[in-house]
Length: 336
Image (cartoon, rainbow, N blue to C red; front, side):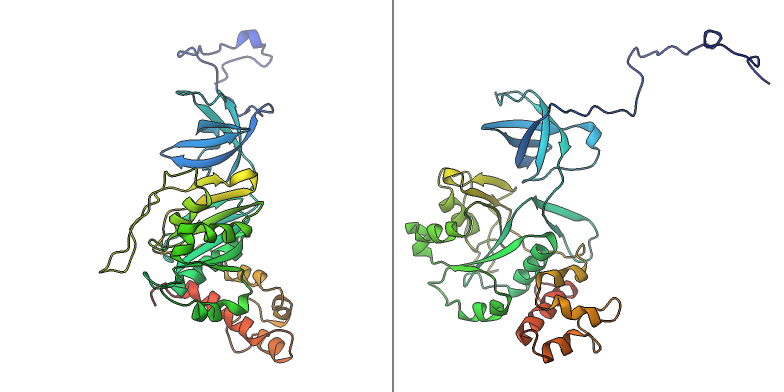
């Protein structure tokens, strides 16, 4: 049954009153063209500490961003109170596209990926040469995550006064990864921080490592003005360290020479999110040889074209061995 005649007029149509008295909903969102640019320094229970020009501002995420989360290193757009004064709160209305992403999953069987850091140029993988013992499988996994996320790796070996670095350097020599070897005495004197700082100049570097390797001690030496981080000890029974860093934190180096991002100590580094086909991009000397590979080649099967590519002298056999070792880390756990 038609409620109105054939020719209706807007005045003839009754509009239901808005009982709540608020504005009707709309899908049109403000563009916030006047929003200020900022960088996320740390995240704590839904509150994000951001650097806006030379001010530290506390902010929250706008509802229109939905489930899209901002992480340390993100470039964001903020509106609201940007004074940075006590008891003020700004609002993050936009997260800018990321140049790089360091991601991990809790385990290889966990499909939920966690973005640890955004827009970092470099991943410093900190490992002790002893107390606790080096864990090459964990190092391999961090390397895969770095290559997959677009970060350049840096290997930092600590506690060289307890064990020599030769064996570890031989294991990763074919990867041509820059490295720094430090001792506990050098950390205390500041010499280690000076040599590591040379690798950080003008870059955003995320530091990762399992507990007890001296990562936070090194970060404190690099950024002496920040003493919020505390250092821990290694359990004599388990050989593992105690977590002393509970959330990622971006810290500026002196004289605006770069940024250091200290991340919580990890005991596992899941790679469920990594597509093995992307790891080959970190091996430019091997990548051309994959043109003759069969479709969906794992690069570790009998008819892989990389074997012939290396046999023809286009690349070092150790480079192919390193590639396959890294690819295999996704199929085995760190302790295997």
